[in-house]
Every structure is written in structure tokens, then in C-alpha cells.
Image 1 (cartoon, rainbow, N blue to C red):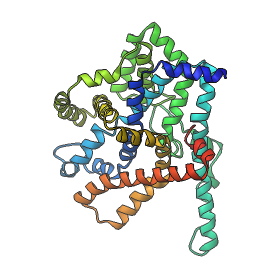
Image 2: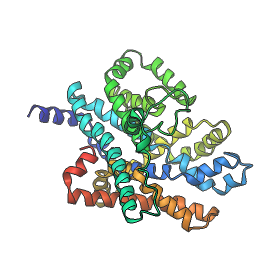
Image 3: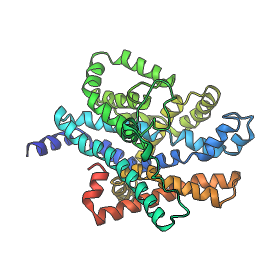
Image 4: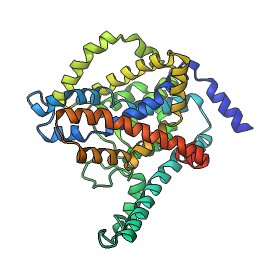
Length: 371
């Protein structure tokens, strides 16, 4: 009963408008993460002369590039902001908060890689039994792992340099977000204390890290900067949705080509990330104020946003993209189709898997979905 009272008290400090607008974005943000990771074509562009208007390969893929770096770069930063903002507003006692985070973050962080690793071993063993002469009898990858490799498969690790091997990120790459979010939650009392004592020097330091693209040792830059921003918004009652609403779409259209030009010229993505966040915050108003049926659909799908975020990295996106590039000839037109077709298909399949799993075994679904 005590925990129930604490939770209800926490929810009461968040306005209905803010709660509704965050809910309206959750599933959309997860879908945009899938699109961001569907970047094989754009990685190819970078290997063929990079970001330059003198590069014909880049110009041919300009629509994908604009969508990739104007829209899909914002979801993870916004997830950090929403998570820390809601946590700070609810203001649970520290041990209560850690208990909740153990269930919502730590368990999925462990379970998803475990399921995928075991699944790969089982599939390989089955193939050996069915096709003993056509399949290598070596169990894939894990037979050569040491203790450090196993640790990195679940948690990954960061070093100041990028030369940290194939296991720099967790085995399921998107789960770096969950790992960093968990670390930031553990450190949240320290972050709150710093923000209360000296917010301006702290954010000057954070913005320097962000715009110079300096990667901290423990967490990624996005986690440190945007998680701290969420706490700042909660501590000082800053309405970031109202701030975004004050910026008109015409003003944004002026900023887009300017900031894209800066990004292409100086390889500084930070400015575009901030612009992308504003665009999506404005879109939340359109969804939240739409018809009751439309918002109800987004609210229902928001319950599968985390599941989609995790499951798409569990080889589903890779399988779809691999099949496309093997079956469809590559040119500018088919690359365009691949970028805007494959990701939505993955989102549909991943969500359907989540809906089916919830009906078949709600307990397993909620464990994997962090609830």
C-alpha cells in the first residue's frame, strides 16, 4: 500500500498535457530508431566520398540523408529526456527508484542478449543435426569467448578511443541505451545536486562535450547531456513542449538547410539533433490533439515501443535488409525504396510479435518489455 501511495503521488505532479504528448511520441520514436539503424545504404555513401555536394553518390541519396539526419537522430535523445524528466518529477525515494529500474531496465538488459545468444546456439545445433555435411560443426562465436567477452556481450563498454573491438557495444547493439540509462539513473542524485548548485557551468561543460562530439568513459555523450537536460527541465519546471510550440514551422524550414550545411561542412551533428528534437516535440502536439481514435491507437502502440526497440536489434532488421540486398538489384531508386520500406516492415513485424507474445505469455512479455 505504501508503494502504491508513493506511485500515485508521483504521477500527480506530471500534467495531463505533458503525459499525453510523451505517450503520443513513444511508439513513433521507436519506429524512427529502426529507420536510423537501417543505414546500410548511407554507410555505403560515406565510403564513396563522404558527405559532399560534389559527391554524385551522396546527391543521389540526398532524400535518405535528409530524413536520417533531420528526423531519426532525435529519438534516443528524447527518450533520455523523457525518462529523466518523468523520474525526477515522480521523485521516488532512491531505493524505490532503483527497485523499479531493476525490473524495467536491468532485467531486459540481461534477458534480451541471453535469449538471442541461446537462440543462435540452438539454431546452429539444429542445422548441424539436419545438414551435418553442409554446416560447420563449430558452435558459433561463444566457444571462443572469455569472461570479458561475456561481460561485454551483455553490457558493452566505452573507452576514450574507438579502437575497442567488435564488442564495444552490447551484443544487441541498441541496448547500449538501456545500459546508459541505468547508469544515469544510478548517478541521478549526483546529477540533481550539481544542477541545483551550479546549472549554468554544468551545462556549458555538457554542451562543450556534445558539440565537440567527445565521448565520456562511462556513458555515451547523448546519455549524459540529454538525461541531465531532462532533470533540469523537471527541477526548474521548464515546459519543453511549450518551448517547441513557440517555434513556427516556417522558422524550422529556414534552420534545416542552414544546419544541414553546417553538419555536412564541419561534421558537427549536434546542431541538427537539437533541431530534430524540436520538430518531433511539435509533432507530438498534432498527435495528442488529433481525433480520439488516432490518439488511442498511438497510446495502445506505446505499450510496445520498448519491445520494438529491443526486438529490431535482435537480428530482425538485419534479416530483412540482408534479404533485400540479395534479392533486389541496387541502384538509387531501389536504395530509396529499401530505406523507406524495410524499416516500416520491421516495425510491423516486431510489433505483431510483441502483441502475439503478450497474448500467449503476458509474464514473459512484461519481463522483456520492462514492466
